[in-house]
Length: 96
Image (cartoon, rainbow, N blue to C red; front, top):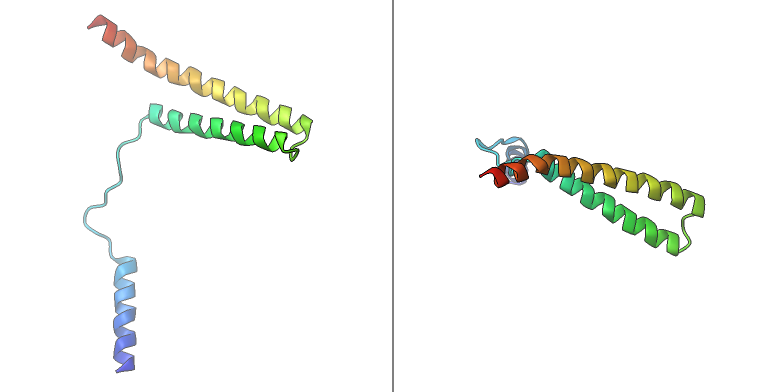
């Protein structure tokens, strides 16, 4: 009886682990613009965290300035690329 229960649990576990459904939902298609938006949100969050850590005295001034400049440069690059990608959409809307 115990051996049968163990075999049944093992078979159920293996079926659960290795069974691949016929159709997998992978979510919506990501665009470059949505990726950039997510990345921008992450950079802004990192800037907020860095500022908090600096004010708490956990980050030295030199490191703070270096990391802040790096994050701000990345944010500026992301915003510039987002503006460039949104530009054709605005032009097409104006022409219509």
